[in-house]
Amino acid sequence: MYAIVRDVEELVIAGLSSRRPGRPPVDQPHSIMDARQQLSELREENRNLSLERDESICREEFLKLRLKWSQIETAELRGEPYDEKTGVLQKKQIKKKEKEETVAMIAHLQTRFGDLPLRRIYEAGCHSRSQLYEWHKGASLDRKTRLPKALDEAVIESTARIVAYFPHFGGVKGQAFLLYHGMGLIGQKAYDGIKKKVKRVLSQEVRGRKDVPGACEPYEHIQPHGIGQIWAEDFTELVVDHARFKLALLIDVFSQYILGWSVGRRATEGLVAVPVKQALAANDGRPPEKFLLQDNGTQYVSESHSRLLKAHEIVSRNIPACTPQYNGSVECGGKELKNIFYNVWEHRQRNDTDKEKTVDERVQRAVAETVYLLNFQIPRPALGGVTPADVQIGLQVQRQREIAQYREQQAARKMFRPLSRPFWDVIKGGVQAELMSTKELLTKLAFFGMRPLRRIAKINQEVWGN
Image (cartoon, rainbow, N blue to C red):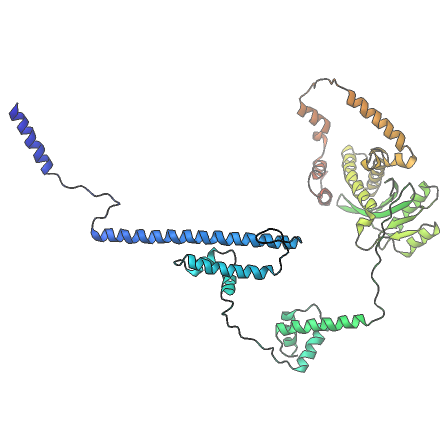
């Protein structure tokens, strides 16, 4: 037994004595040179991390400063006084203060982070590097004063003449014009300076003239307080079957009732005269109590239209130029008529109502149906939920009472029959989209997006097959 133990002991000692050292870990140096190299790399990495940290702190300081002065600028724009410590207070020369504090911040950061290069501090700032450099070195920058160049008298006079003849020329174009025609050489900045003086000469001359027209008087917007007080007329455009039609309208501003209309290929004086005659016939020959509102279109300011209005003792009033909002009643009425018209047109096309008629006749019939719907079938919330015809005839109060009573009856209902079909099938049954043509589908889908009338006009400009 002892012999066996001794033999094992000898084998273990022999095995241990024959072992060699293994590979050192990767992160440990193999020699003194490797250790020094690793120490140098660690120092450089530590320095870079320190610089990045310092740069982050610089960026944070600049952002705080930028935010503060942005708040001050916002307060100044709003007219609110602002103070750096107490809050809102009147503060002047904000840009100058911002510049001074930014320069002080750069000096402070240079002192605080001595190892951080100046360019890294500039990069951390919210301003451009050139702006920060200009602010920081502004006191020491040596700028040479540039004296204005002497100009020949003939060149000055020629330049002034060119500016007066072509006031829209800038320095580049004016300089090129003078050079091209051999009238002298002038700098762009000098040209702009002469241009300012020419403006001053022209302004002085205008102030000395006696025939300068006066300023336009403010337009007084008068609203009607009853039926038949103010009429308004205008025309709009319809696009169907690759053709354009002009539609003239005349409405009662108070009731929104369409008193007259006419449609044609061209907006002529005869086209706009038809609605006036229809309105007089509908009003028993009586003109509006106050006036007829119209824009400055050539058809409305023509002599023939003026003679027609004077013959029937109609006082006309024109809105200011380029202000259609003053004639908003008929403008909105025309837009609503077009919204209804395109749906009526497609519905009549689907049913082949006017299959044997010409395009002009079909448009006439579609507009007539549209006017009927607007006057007698479609209520207006602005009129209390009744139609323009109810207001025009004098049935507004009676119809409002009937509608209020019907609403109460419907609101009192509590029991409803359960749906016999799925909800989606009920919706599809009401729409009946499968019966519509592709053009009608696109027309109706246009009203679910932005600017539907423009989309519909584009659709109707296309050539569609049968």
